[in-house]
Amino acid sequence: MPVRQKDAQRALELLQQYRSKQGSAEEDRQLTQSLDRVINVFQSQLFSALLGKNI
Image (cartoon, rainbow, N blue to C red; front, side, top):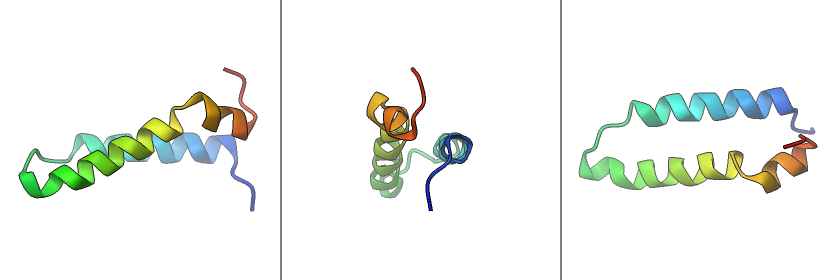
């Protein structure tokens, strides 16, 4: 099933909202780092190009 651009954008928005609600506790550090990595991938030019989005 192909990923649609609007679905990817919605997923990015949800990840960013979840990330902003994370605390700064030490046990959350690994989760926060992982979320940051995924968010960076969603925001990358390569990911946008794979979706066929013009940057």
